[in-house]
Length: 404
Image (cartoon, rainbow, N blue to C red; front, side, top):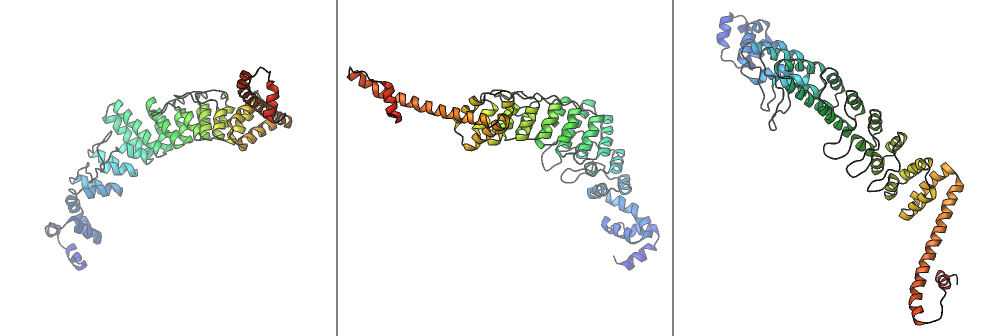
């Protein structure tokens, strides 16, 4: 239709305009509405009536946040539960975008508010409440929740709140989480599930909210026999370790194979977490099936860990010579030995370092003499059987060691 035709059409009586445009598609009528104010007054009701059966009109009104357009479409018969090919309804779209006026209009016209959704992809698996939580719309979340409590049993709504909490944690929506914990406290099971996600994702600010709401800091992981502080220590998440300790987490609790959080800190080369645990009173000598934290650091050839643990152990009264000999037996290299000696020198002075080295020299000489003694005995046994002359074992030892 040409612009000149539009001008001619605008001067016709309304009844005649209705007759002429009766077979026009909605898009053509919408174009006429945009080009002429006179035609807009006459043809808008026609546009709404013709567009009502088309899902795209309702969904576009929801996405563009146009309550006036939506209300007219619904008035002329459009379904408030209209969905696209992927199962997204107007409520889903409005909840995701935070369009509260659209949500109110749809609910007033009888839209079905799902407490939960299920099914297979590519169809929508999230409820409007889930979308509000995922996208951080606090007012939308509050609005939807009030309608859910009016329409469903409290147990179903509480379950929906628990699911929404997990989505909010996953998307790091602290504002929604804070509101939810204040006004609709979730169950302990949902709190624990959320706290597990927080530790895995390293979100200390959200962890503080959950712990303040009563989440148990000693909860076990769902897939392995470790507590939250085990995993936080292994990954060197110092803020989380500190929050968990302040909330009452057990710092010497053992996992399924007897490892404490301090062992996990050594396992993950987590120096900061290890020092924090020691400052909080962790048992440095706690043993497991794999030994102590110190022996674990030696096995890993982790010089920094050996130095830090040695400094703490010496302050608690370790037998330095005994630990030095244990370290030397592992034969892990100079870096670990030097780290231990640095800790000894810093705590006890250079004289103690020299004593360690001297004691090691004596130990080496003693082992060499014992080896020579064994060689002498092996040589002496058949000799004594074949001759009656006495043989001096000490003389043979000196021969084998090169002193004779």
